[in-house]
Length: 545
Image (tube, rainbow, N blue to C red; front, side, top):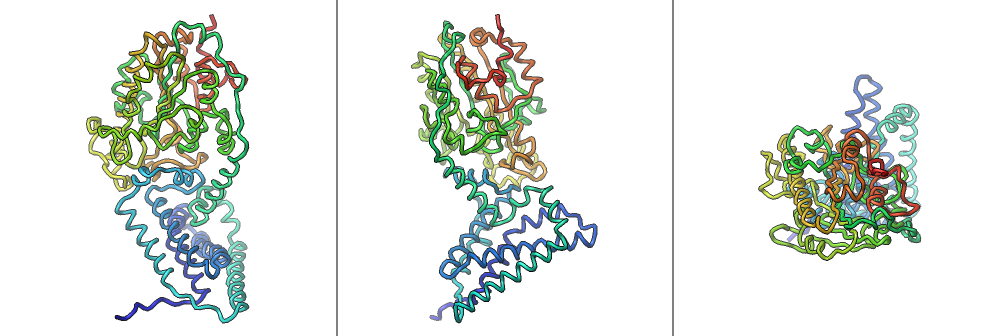
């Protein structure tokens, strides 16, 4: 039986071939977007557009000439090709960009979330521009240079020629490139593999930074007289939503009735204007519980600094975090917490993911054991995409037809919107059940519930899907989040809370997740220098007499 002949090429041809493939196959998303932005209305613009792939090829040629060294070139080339294929698929399928937050999300994604993304289309895409080219690279035999000097001379000549072309393009088109990238800052995040390398370096830097000494805050925290003198203990349930956007809440004016249960209650206050701290869970969750406002938020600082949950626990408030998502992102590391997905209840869980009703499983038993002020955080799976159709039971399939696939970019606008709206209908029902549970304990506690989503979601508006867009350019669908509050009569009395004032503030004022840290301290009347009353969204509605 004859052996299959191996492909052969010399060293420099190997470098050029890999560079050509990554430039013209795996960076097509960049060129597609760039050529949409640059109008072909003049000869200069046409030549400018044509120079982009040439410039990118020359830049990558220089980089790969330095990286693809003997003994290392094949493994490095294969890694770049495989990673580039995956990145190319996600950029095309979800019209997203690759930055530090997106890479961090990928690194922190659990197995179930990763499996959610798999589809036949993804496997085919990855095979064609990733696996097959990687096999070709591995099978290619590279003929060695006749001498070390010849190897160095050819490599140097390749680099110099590329640099000269880069300089030539810069001389003619610098004034075009400078404003192009300044006005379209997200474009650099479409360049492969620099987007992945840059974001990994950023995450590594953050990780190293997070190894700094841990800092405690609010060491002076203690309960004040407003709460200690109350006849009933205070119990707050904070439902932390996932990927819910305010635009699709009927309580906020959405034309569809996505809040059929909560809208029947006259003791629910909806906050019209609330913005998120980030556009991804990995940013928003630690940010909203930290003492840092969004504009000063530092991920590395948050990782080695206590948050409001730590302060509440120190002030003798019973704390419990229940998680049905991909973790608390470090917020609950030092307080009692439960991963409810590990319960694996067959009626609520399938393939490692659970419906949000599991957050209420035996919660009644836990509340019965409480004899102190307490806060319970319920971290939802919510409307996490792209498998929206798996986030609600069939009885909540109120809007049809639905998009019953994770290839949401292939669904029509109506069915995708229907499916997403059904997730909100289910969240509405889960929140209503939470309120009913709290009402059962009003003989013992002054009870309240707050719901706040971590970030929003894009459903194809302007070609965007999912979330994670850099905040500076993120659409309102990803940053305008729903927030609501239910309060019992006993809670309003204990907090001296003016209902009319709260309704007015919720309707007219603008709030953000920056307010959560101080509002939680205010609810439990925690006396500490960390507390800023001006950022407590309820303080202005507490009666002074």
